[in-house]
Amino acid sequence: MNPQIPSNETDVPRNYPGRLCFYHANANGNGAAVRFELKTAQGEREGCFFMVFARQKTLPERNGGNGRQTATFDWNGKITVKFGFSDICNLLLVLTGRCEQAGGGRGLFHDTADANTVIALRRQQEPAGYALEVSRKPKHAGAEVSRMRVLLAEAEALGLKCIFEQALLPIVFWPLGRSDSMGTAPCGPSAKA
Image 1 (cartoon, helix red, strand yellow):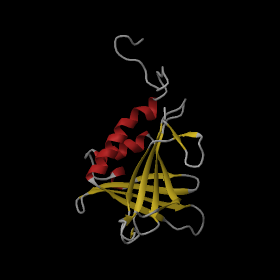
Image 2: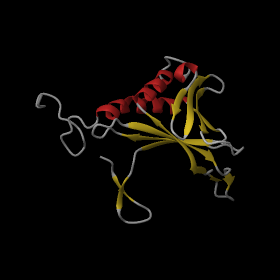
Image 3: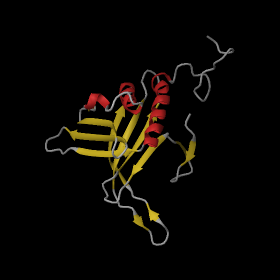
């Protein structure tokens, strides 16, 4: 169950979806942010992760004597990708060190009615970390390819790995065995078989 958080616009509570965000702004203004949102399984529909990329919109600035003002990102011009079970497992192969690049070096290819998207994840040595990239080409005539990239630090990649591993079960089986308001099934000696 998602916690109820009051909205800034009204006093009416709303569901607040869980999100994991990495903000990678730079002084050149060509940084990006990436956000991961978990959607658990519901009924017969499997769950998924949505990965949302946004370009850096403004440069970080010094705000007088008050310190640094953070950069902003263009969430209206975002690129959104849906990761199913197989996609997540493919990314985990890289994050657990079983392979150097997702999709055997070709990346993960998503073909929709509107666009072709390639998602790449690879471990790199210099600078150390995991390069996460998305490239999307809309299918209408004259469309240009949009590319965004972030370099996840080792600690960020470790956190993402843990989140992906823990999410595999609720992505596929979340509604099975629900017995209380938190969606957890009883276990142990008193659990019914």
